[in-house]
Length: 243
Image (cartoon, rainbow, N blue to C red; front, side):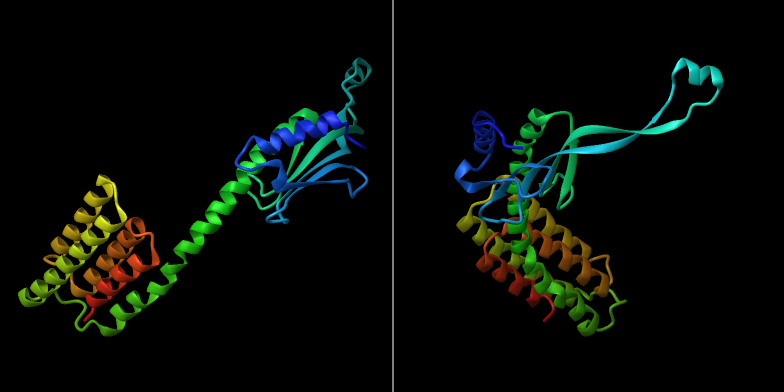
């Protein structure tokens, strides 16, 4: 089935309606028997949108008056023409199929498909930024290996020493905030997190404090520091807590 030029132009308009332009896509001739059109996202060709016109079989029940009177409603199969879209990425899955009522509805789905592409690209980028989390698996391991008497509470001297290190961390974060710029809510969250770790020194045993404080501080780092350099500064300061 070959689409009219006017329909192709409508599809190109849909491709322009999102975050991309029509030049980001390639419209291919149908490769399969039932395929109407296939669109490829050029920068990442595993992302595609394809429309099929196909026939499906549905089970029906004979509810005619004669069948009702006889008390025997038999089932039978009936073929029905339908339009399917195959979308990658889909709304929830890597590849999804959707049955729609007509070709216009199928074309309308192109805009949501391009939105899914943008979300997937953005999330992939975020995941790469978050890969640094794996670098901090050492923290929990070091707590288990290096902290002596983890069930005991801190002495006043130990608590005072850690308190000073937390103050150093607070000042380093303050410097970074000034350099990179943070809104007021993030600054408040940073202050509250550091103050909470200080307060916990009085009540938590050493082992529990190091683990919970480490998690709080590393999460704080991920939320306010977006550069590799900034994260490294905070990581080194957090690491210093174990010395």
